[in-house]
Amino acid sequence: MPFLHPALDKAAAGLASLGTAAAGIRAPDPIAALRQLDCSPQSIRESARTLSSGRDVLVMARLEFERGAHRAERKWGGEPAAQFRGSADELDAHYRQAAEAAARTAAVGFDLAELLDRLANQTSAQVLRIAEAAAPAIEASLTGDRSADQAVREACAAIAEAVTRGLAAIGEATTFLEPFGVPVLPE
Image 1 (tube, one colour):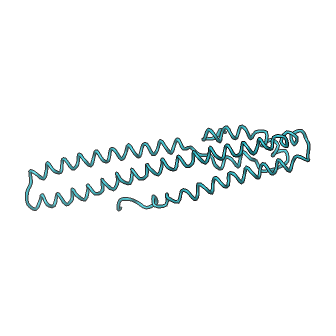
Image 2 (image 1 turned 30 degrees about the horizontal axis):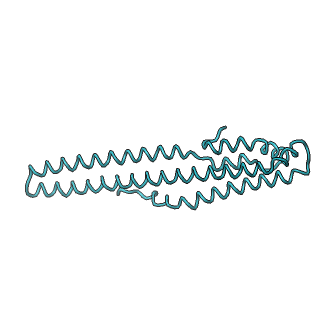
Image 3 (image 1 turned 135 degrees about the vertical axis):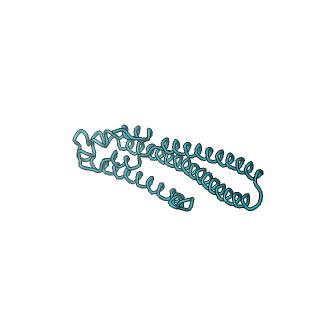
């Protein structure tokens, strides 16, 4: 199954012989380790663009509502106009909150996509360097030279560690998502 992220997919292809050697000596699968980091920043960017467009719709709806409210107020007077203005102001505040929330969420989506893309690219480059450095041991192990098995195991462990560091970086960097678990508008 192909990876979602193109750099990770390319890295997985570059790890094929290491994966085969690892399977032959029952070492951890470097491609399975890499799969833990798989992501689709492009999908997140598309969602963020959709949110940003939704924010624009909310802003336009708010402006249209405000124009309509002002027209209605000019024709009314007294207590009904004051009551209407209070309700209109409350609704306007909800429009503003929703638009601001959509804009903040879209910005976070763009930031998250950038982070995931950067980490996937960095980790892909790193694991390919590890596999390249271990290439002689990988070839030797594939031909049955058991003296090379330890180097293959070490390469697999180094790849697993690189993936673990990438996952930890995502976990640390995404603490900014916590406020998004709280509803913006009152229920």
